[in-house]
Length: 517
Ligand code: HXC
Image 1 (tube, rainbow, N blue to C red):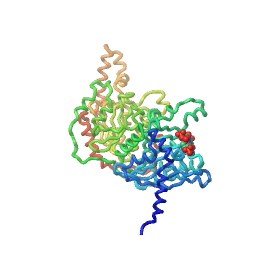
Image 2 (cartoon, protein in one colour; image 1 turned 90 degrees about the vertical axis):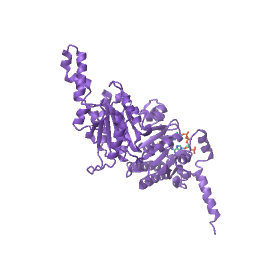
Image 3 (cartoon, rainbow, N blue to C red; image 1 turned 45 degrees about the vertical axis):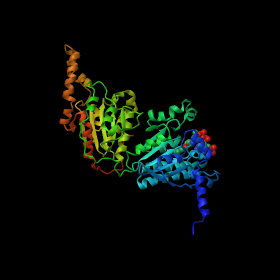
Image 4 (cartoon, helix red, strand yellow; image 1 turned 45 degrees about the horizontal axis):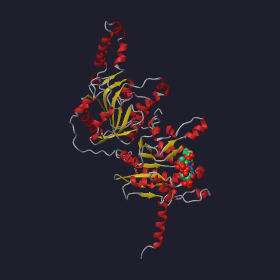
């Protein structure tokens, strides 16, 4: 007794055909260009032997309407679940060799099912987007398919992490699926993403633009801020995705993968003292501070090319996964502007969803003055930052390194916005406004009438710093938990994190707050 061999042969034949994507020629063409196929990408993502495909035998439904006469293996998208570093992750990978990875009814249904699987089982979803967009032959069915994918992206948002790799063309409305996910990794040169490309822009408005200007990875990373990471090639994109996942829990009900258990290391780091220039006018580079603060100097920066005046990213501090938000005084004096506020606010809210404690490093002259900022809506955008910090309930630890003035003091995760602990270095300046501006207002006549106005001004600035901007004043009023030496920072932050990991904060029930979008 044994199974009829013909049945096995039939299965093998069908599998072989489907696994062959759009055919040997098209696969070879891609390989010759140094591109991976949809299946190569999943093979490289998942631990060998762990991938369970969903819908290998799926067929497009265009035949139902007599519109597409040929087979489309797996309907142009490979979906399933497999293990990444020992944890299950769902994925879908669009197959450009099959009808240009275009999205039809079944293609969309497979994507929706993969996201649904992720929601039900509490696991992240990773996608490789590589597609000519809505499948022309399926008309409204492909548009309807997109609508269903967007709806599912939104349903999954806040439940499981969603990460998109933009690996090829991603044009028109199709770009909204990546945009609805948490992180986008875009591959340099081989990918482009835009709503209206150069040809449409020219036809509609007469404006001549290049693809580099509107759709390249560089434009999306540094100008519009649409994406979070630029990869050099497919393998690099997969490595970035894996590294990102290594900081994230599988779903919103889990803690992130902290690696701790060792006793607290309370040793000092004298190198941190040396980073602080004695001259308050010289900028501090927040990257240098972060490097000393986090385990092994390993900081996974997010959106490193966009709004460089604020730095965000993931790291571990004595094993505890944290999201770091730091002003960058070495760029635009670390001022908060529209883009910096948007960038930080979204990251803070992501960390809150996935139970990732926040560490905020403060050194900012305040919100950026200027007509463009006012007319661009800095009030609305800056309010996002305030809203984000005030509404997050994860542990929030703040270190005020140097300048912390005015609204920016409050916005950068002050005690008043719910920080669990705020530490200030002796160099911290916490006040309504900077010493130069404030002395000009308070002592205008005194400076003007002094025998040596310049010398008197300098004296008054020093006095102001002592009296009105001292961290001891803030500590005396309870807005600062403790004043610490820079060399103590790593130990103090690690201790604060350990002491706050069990935090439970319950707010009044509501549908959701009304963040100023
Ligand atoms: C059906 C498509 C397709 C599409 C490509 N193909 N796009 N089939 N529907 N949307 C097919 C081609 O016919 C071809 O099939 C194969 O995919 C490869 O395409 P090529 O054009 O040969 O490849 P390439 O030269 O690399 O150009 C890739 C491309 C181009 C830039 C993506 O194909 C293109 O411009 N496609 C149309 C893009 C587009 O405008 N899509 C609609 C966007 S609007 P064969 O059989 O020859 O291999 C949209 C609305 C979404 O998506 C709305 C959501 C709200």
